[in-house]
Image (cartoon, rainbow, N blue to C red; front, side, top):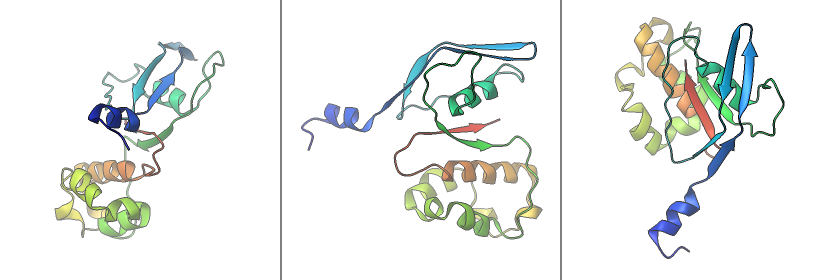
Length: 158
């Protein structure tokens, strides 16, 4: 049992460290400075196409850098840029099939489903959704794929 709120925060926050790395792909070279982050942070990467965002995520995921370094391998939940729906059913059926545990959890409903405005499309066929609706469903699927066991997972939408 902890005695102060400060101890509780430290107890629940894990730090993840990654080393300096480089990755060369054709004429492109990405240089990554080593760094760290905690599981209580939300980090956003913004940049034009071809600036190395996906390459960085793949390095954290476990791809080999130019020179092997001791590194951690993080789990990554990836939402593709283009989506071609093939699921023969409703959004609700897809979410139950793919992320049932997360979908049924009240906090996931509050923190993810409501802000993503899926309530009004849950009973629509996946194949009839607009591009924007498909993107929202894909984000929910990616977020729902996070392991609830406490392992860090990185969500990346490109």
